[in-house]
Image 1: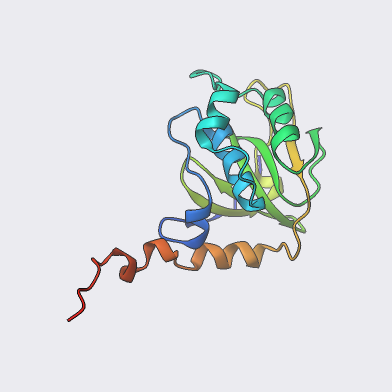
Image 2: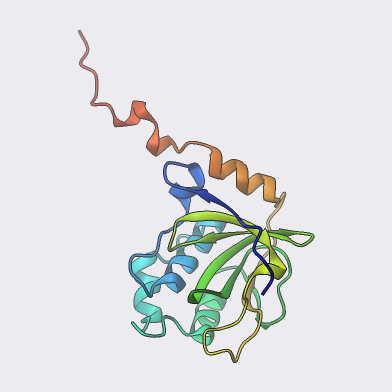
Length: 181
């Protein structure tokens, strides 16, 4: 594996952080990525609990690649899935971060890729060749689920959303209502 040149942007309090779903336990990165992908496309068909119930992640192995692809085909703007088929846009990818982990690729420009990590709730920009992109079992390499292209998709767009404060995190929204005099 190449030396990582990753930049990590925490998403708490950001517009992008409010949009994307954090995984709720050690083995639900699959449902979190599916929910986050649905949010990126504005799909309201399923929420985190529905994705979690449909995928039934195993506490030892998480969610199955092929179950995720079948569910994505039914609930997301699915294009394709498989090994070594990443098209450079939004995709759910199975990489290694200490162990097998699903992340949501958002955009690739040249050798740079920006993706969402639902465990750490952060946006990561890295060299795509620095990723250990293989299933935990080692039998699938560069496996992903490609979703429909987004208009005006760029790394700068995602970085900007990661740095824009969320309306939900605005101090004015956290104040109690003011009484009229």
